Image (cartoon, rainbow, N blue to C red; front, side):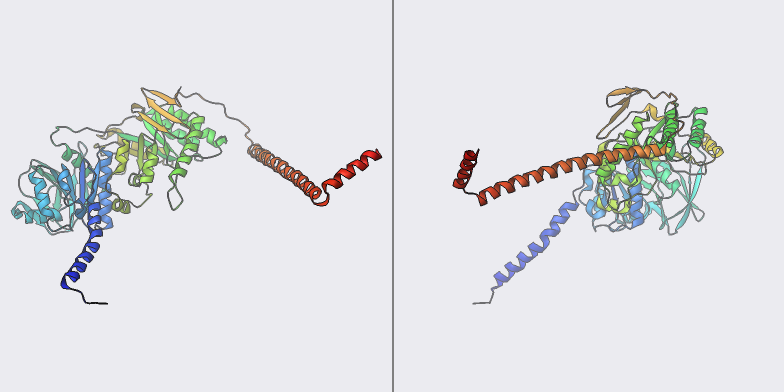
Length: 538
């Protein structure tokens, strides 16, 4: 066998090996560049750390609450795709492909609306495009932000950053003030189609409020006045075993002050006939008939893996309990992270109105890494986001989207009164959820609320409060004995069926054994002789 190879054969093998090795890389690159079309693209740094990804998650939430479809990915995954988007946000893109600046420059020249959050990437971009003289940069890490949300008094916050950049040319729009070591700059400035927000810490409450307002203005700069959204006062996460008397006192405060409110109630799965549950639902019906809207809190998942079927089943059971008691939930309350998880998005798809709490239930950072768009946008929810408190009163300062101000029913009534007054005096208007439309469905029930009418399974129901009579001497033992009786009756029925089946099998076996014995021990002629014998004897 000749083991010598010609030059052409060696070159061919080397070329073939290279094609085999590079093919998966091309395939992966092709997959990573498939960004869905959206209203807005968010670009973040390759290899972004957890802090940056958490801030990107906050930006996605803000835009989702504003009802925008968002795509998001690292710079390498966005390279070659950005020209398909007319609105692009760059969040601290410190690591990116070599010619990334050229693509951004093309976007700028084509008139795309560009928003730079933070200073590091904008500094590099301006340097690479020969515009180093258009900004000043302070290599300091601490500053102070002064921002005035609309007509409220100014707020301030200590902020941190890896340097502060400010455009020095006169802009078309400028707002907020940032002080850095006795030097002043802006919070947000727009020059042409390039907008810069100088602070990147979205986790800071004041920065979060300011960014929400400035993003709303950035998306629609031509409009003189953007839409102003309302705030909703919500008594948060109320359990059936909590004091109905205290809940009634809190509800009465809202009723007396003639202010709209909502109550988020925890799900229940059993003991719907217990007096505590009856009293709890009595207060809920009273609240429902006096301006209060009931919202069901999502079931708390205590398993490692989220089971959408199990959660839907629990929601079905809980909804059925409440509906039987004349309590009509209008929507679902969920943690913030639910909007990033496809399984949880499927659960939410059954509800029109989604109230978002600030509970932690999932790692937003990993979910941002795994996804590339806000899939929940397809459901067209009516969002009510958690408000961002800037003071002890906790009133909302965000009017770029609907927000909830949460009240704890265990607080003192004086504290609750002062917080209601703070919400009243806020520039963000108060509104009732009864003025909106709502709907949901489960495997057993459907609810539609529109034109001030509630339809449960197609039948109109009335939310007017009518007092009910409570059973004075409720016997828990009787309830238990009834349950035991039902269980024993069911078990007896099963036992009877088992006995019948066993007896039938026993008779079958006897018949088969007798037949086999006749076949084995008697011949046919012997049987005929025996028959003749008994006949003659008779």
